[in-house]
Image (cartoon, rainbow, N blue to C red):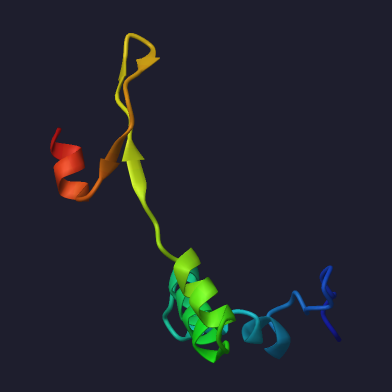
Amino acid sequence: RMGSLGPRGVERSGGAMSQATTFWRLSGMSFLQMTSVATSTLRGALKEPMRSSALAREAVSYNRVVYQQGKASAKTPVTSLAASVAK
């Protein structure tokens, strides 16, 4: 007996198709690790100028805002997470 198919045509009853959809779980990776590897691989495969454009978008910055009596203070850039938590 065949299992029922889900919305994307993937078998729900634990057959080979459903195991293939979780290859990253079977390899011991988390979803975030898998997406990080996938994006790194994709960015590495790009040709210039798209590669430098994609690499520029991966930069991340954080700002810290302290609320006192319901009002926000000025934003301060975070350069170290440890220093930001200690304040």
